[in-house]
Length: 197
Image (cartoon, rainbow, N blue to C red):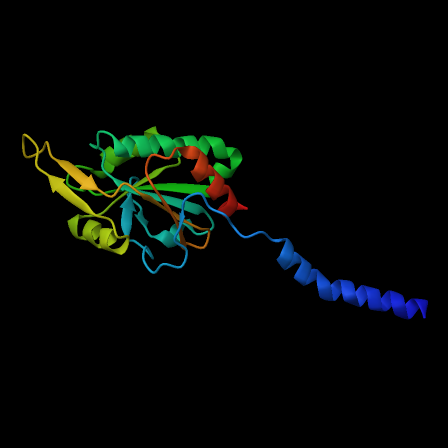
């Protein structure tokens, strides 16, 4: 009888373990806007600042943080890149599992050489991405990014209005978060740690 009861207890444990595991796993709670499941931002075809053709699939296995801007931007872009550098620093060793991508909306001035100088100045792991005018327009449509040239005092002294939010993708390349500009590194670090765990 004792053997039978012992066997039944073992069977009960085996049956209940998967259920206990599901109960114990807490749902993710993000500080930034959870946009999981939205049907946009599926892929891109651009060239990085080293001249290598890139798609989102190249970064599978990493959490990706993607931002659109331009190197002549006086405020939002350098502030965001500096904020992302702060995020990487706060993540410590986990930062190697994160890829920050800066996509230019000003391919006319943002050459590969300029991106190669500008983007890694914030963190050597960051990548600048660019395409020609058509590729830039295509990726902006796919990622629902607005950008528009604003005339300056000379033809080359223009600015570009653009969406200032960033997107976060999980390790499987699925869009997960919309990060609004200017909230600092702390909420981003919190959310990335959940996606990395």
